[in-house]
Amino acid sequence: MLILLDSSFTLIKPSQPVGLVYAQYLEASTNLSVDPATIQAAFRSSFARAPSPTYAYQNSGHHTEVSWWRSLVLKIFSETLEKSSLSAPALELEACFDSLFDHYAQPTSWVLYPETVFFLEAASKIGTIAVVSNFDNRLAPILDGLGIGSFFKDVITSADALARKPERKIFDFALKRLNFRAEETCFCGDSYEADYLGASAAGIRSFHLTRPTNTLVDFLEFCR
Image (cartoon, rainbow, N blue to C red):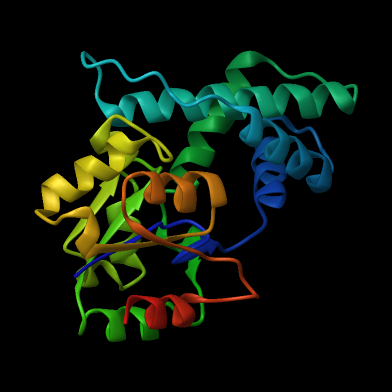
């Protein structure tokens, strides 16, 4: 049996609210103070509306992911500053993005959910475990730094597959790389569209994680 897992908000989550971190870095780079709640709202809105990256084979998937995040974060900054009647030089905002991107590459910027280690220890006894995530080359070192990297046969990201969930391509890429069939596989993630519907469309038995209604412990029973 193959057990596939999303990463962010499934196994791990940011150690601090995104709006607070963005506001702190923005102030450090520009000396401008913005309301964390305003930037949090801008993040949620912009992230929800953002199209998937356009992957080009001449560029690495990681490079494409970085460019996508750069455009998104600069848009969030722009919207937040405009609402606050503030402005900042483009070079300062670019530098702020670079600092933020590095911040979220650090394992200390993330924490495990309370049941993550228990789940991984139990799941490793019933199947092969791997991660399939809309992420980039930062993910594997983050999971290693949090002490859970050794549980995974592979950590597959959209940067590897040149496709993001819910596209079938990333699921097919993972199955081929791990040498499993869809009918031998279970998947768990927190996004209904990207994770549950995406994996289901690829023929994988899918579990929608909706904390606090259910947790990875419930997914463990699902796998069994």
